[in-house]
Length: 327
Ligand code: FUB
Image 1 (cartoon, rainbow, N blue to C red):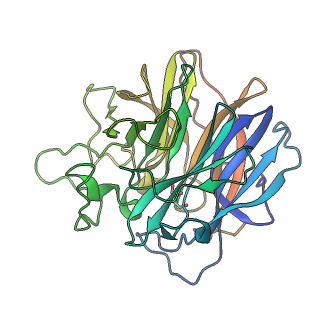
Image 2 (cartoon, rainbow, N blue to C red):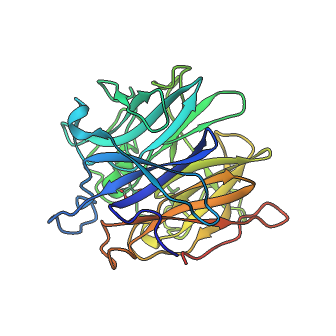
Image 3 (cartoon, helix red, strand yellow):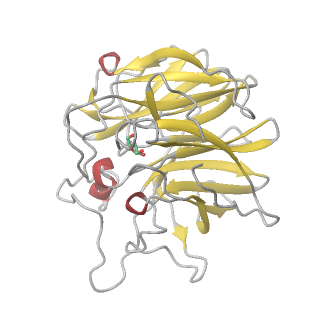
């Protein structure tokens, strides 16, 4: 399957349908001399482009709307504009983005625009109480918006095991099981205020349950535990929370009856792609369901030079997502 965008490297695609068109909000990967490490320093991105497309089967021409936000535009950011997302509410468009602040701590910022393709004006401070990476915004049918986020290792989620305000950089690795079973760390979610620019109340940890036990997935269950790349979509009354398992390279999903969970593990969406990271979004468009994802085919396997792709995916009669391959 061919990448959708080939003139620059793009990753972490968040796709949404706005005004009858698919808009894609990806990371913009760039060349760097920084060597691959588990902290993700090689993902050294400095700006965002927005793309749009009016057909996916087969894909039409992709419009590159150009740079909509860059490091220098945001007073609190030092580096690493990682995976963004966008949302629309009451005719305004909101771009959510993670980046390291001047102390090197990941926070999440918001920038506001009048059109899906921007331009976006960033708030001067990160969202109060935000941390870690990979924001994904879901606006429910009642208009309430939720921001999901979190990522292990370089994404620093493991540094918040003592609470939302207790950043402890001593936690530098994934949580390990020693002796008694340890629960996996959950992704975080916060309800957004009506103006979409702050959390309405303290963020919560989401629980992902193992179907066979009804108990939370454990930290050593690397094939199923949350690592990064949160996404939330709704089908009928069912909320699908999907994510990457990081070091085992799967995209998985879990379902629940509330946007705040708990969610029960449902299976894999995508088998490992070429490259270490895997990150996605799921969107309905013209009666079909599409998975947006990335791989490193265009760069011939360079982990930090990724390209966005899209493919149709399917549910079975029970609403389970049928696992697919990257091709
Ligand atoms: O693109 C940088 C990071 O790599 C993202 O934040 C993660 O989800 C992974 O794709």
